[in-house]
Image 1 (cartoon, helix red, strand yellow):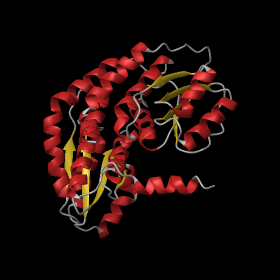
Image 2: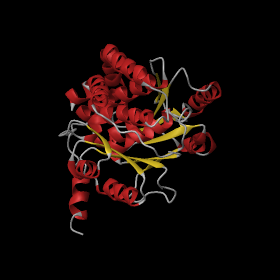
Image 3: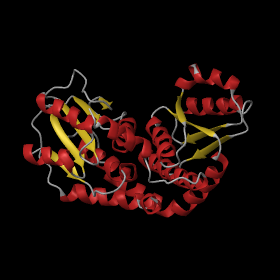
Image 4: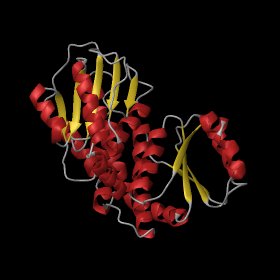
Length: 326
């Protein structure tokens, strides 16, 4: 996993190359809605993309993490199906519903049944390298979803920002690793809570999921300003066993920046473990990738400190084996 985490900049660059070398057919449909369907390591990219393009996408984006699609899906809906293995049962079920409703379908996968369907039906699709944990391939799936939305004319061409993200992570990798190792040592033995500003929730979710799978730790996340209307009161019963990490960006809305400062003051009354990390980068995409890379490295160092197998997902494997009996 260490080499896979270190390869995130390379994965972004390779995803751009995959897109450039793949012929994608135009669509004559009027796309007025987008559904991105996928789960886990394959699905988090959709959540992050939906956040980052909300201010420019010409159609609303709904991220679906279920067997079934929303009722509004029809021939004018772009359904992006993400399944790294190509066999995720919830995603295949949603994909089949999209086919039955004559939606515009785009598939991102490494193979499996999803690739078979794409080839058989002639759907637009992009194929990523297979054989790795889906959570380690986010650089591919996240990058390619920006490409898909641009292909349908729904967002601007973000190639330069993506390319700059790969350069930023390559240049900053050493510093990011050092910071991550320090944060991991502070987080060990605590219950982490990840806070971010609205519009970057997907990045917080990514870190939570990485701590779950890689570090074998429970974690939660919340978003400002929403958490100011509920969760903040819960901190009145906070303890030093909880570690509050704020992921911050210079581009965050100034009113929310003030909220963060006040939140920190309140939370610091109930735990000594309050830390903030500022991203680097000149765009929201670069800033998001910076925090993603930092979070991945935090999860790696915590797996070492917790003395767990970072690759193992025994509980998920057990769930799948039990479901297979029905």
